[in-house]
Length: 290
Ligand SMILES: [Zn+2]
Image (cartoon, rainbow, N blue to C red; front, side, top):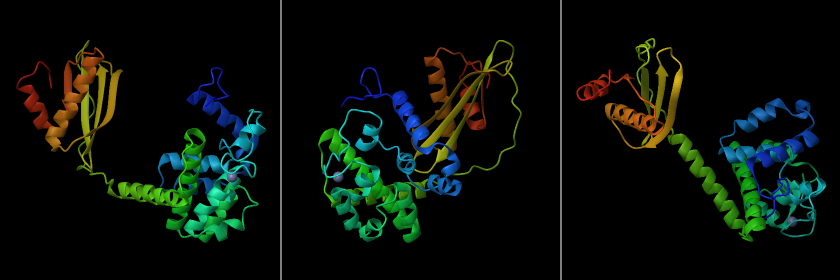
C-alpha cells in the first residue's frame, strides 16, 4: 500500500497526524458545533483507548474511507472496496454496506439503524444511545469498531470474515476488557508520614526508589536520581510482572533502578527507600549510604 501523504509513500505517525488535523479543520471547523456533554460521555465510555479514538474519529468524520480520501484529491476510486455498489462513506462502510447490514441484522439492531441512514455517524450513535441499554450501547460501539477493523483487514490483506465472527469478536473483546478493568483494583498501602527530601552531600547523587503493587502480579517501579541541589538527573517508571512481598518488591525496585542507571552510566552515592528492611539488608554489604 502507498501512503499518499508522505514523500516516500510510507505511513508515519507524523503524516497521519497531519492528515487527521487537516480533516478536522476542514470538516469540523470549530468545536462550537460539538456538544461538550456528548464528548464527555464518549471519552468516559469504558473501552480500550483505540476504540474510544475510533469513535471520536467517527464522530468528526475523519475515518480514512475511500470517499473521504477521494474528496481530498487522493487518486482512489471513492466506491466501496467491498461491495462496489456505493461510495465508501463512513455511514456506508459502517452501516448500510451489505456486509455491515448483515452484521447489524445478526445483532438484531438493523431495524433501529435503517431508519437513521440519512444521518451522519454521530447522529446514528446518539440515536442508538437513546434506544439501547448501556451494555447494549457498549456492544453497539464495539461492533462498529469490529466492522471497521475487518474492513481494514479486507482492504489491506484481502481477508474476509463472516458476520458471526465480527459480532463474536466484538463481544469477546468487550467482555475481556470489562473483566480486566474489574480486576484492576489498586492495593492502597497505609498512609505514611511525608518526609521532606534531604539532599546528598555536595557532588553526590541520591536515588529515591518506591514500588507500587497491583492485582494480577504487576508491580510498578518508580525511581528518581537527583544531585545535591535537587536537580533530577534521571528517572524511571516501569511496570513489571511478578508476585512480591512488600520488602522483596522494594528490593526488586532498587535492583531494577540500579541496573537502569548503570546502563546509562550514572553513579549513585546515596539510596533512599521507605522500606527499612530493604535498606538495612543493603546496608549490611554495600558501598552506599542508605
Ligand atoms: Zn459496500
